[in-house]
Image (cartoon, rainbow, N blue to C red):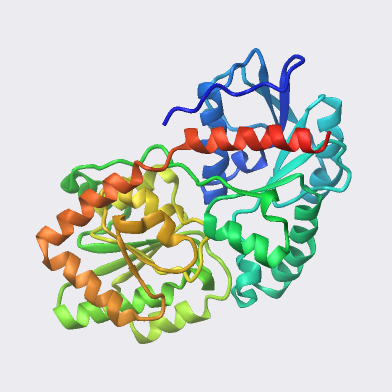
Length: 387
């Protein structure tokens, strides 16, 4: 669906201040959100009437966004991230005559213009045990206050919207769900080519299953390891599990699983890999396993579906909204069910091909253009709401 031309608030160029710091970091779901949204804006906003002022603490990397007169990049040096968010960014938005600002999670009390903030999820309130004590306290201190200050709160699924309204006690009209679009650069590749690439770059030979995400308790990687262990035992197949993601906290369960469940080195941890490598890993994998207890959205299943890779995901949080009929949804605490699903996909060619086709169709339903259209409307509402 192509969005309608962006409406104007009248009276010259509409300038929106963007906290663009996440564009300077490594590949994460947060970076994907900002990059997808800002690129979609560049495809339909009129640069003569609209301007996105991209504020960051250091210069944006070359190529992170397309060349466009819509963007105006401003570097604001600061001695710390917190001081940047609290003081430098709010002050600069007024200096650059912006009508509204868009942040993620943090809204300084020093803003003098309306602010829209994106809250991807409130998993720290859904289950505090998924977070270290320090992070938990910081999130509880900052996010509820930021949401109260914001003119509007954006989030990336209806599940997350309901949780934000319920747990932060916000009026429903203040919270708007704008689903993530399909990240660019994910598409089917011939299996043998993907296998050869992964073998050449990582030394990993097929068959393997893939798990993508930060190594932390909420992602529930213990279940993935247990499921593959059962599948190996029941079938005798030489399956591997490739675990890809940044190191997180509380790795005790993962270490226990490796000591007690894993023999013959079939669990492979790659650490963080760049997004262009994920394309090949998704295509080479037999199945993506995503057993997370809770997600505000869940980009890896969407990326895998766009590659035609079968997905088994948990039915926790917003994952049913994303995967729907494009994959298999199972409880996040039943490893035997996951093992049976793994073997069904591997051993039933017709079922596997049906999953592949449904995955490809489902992935195409997520559009950054639609996300951008809804987000721009929220900007205008926020500016009008706050005068």
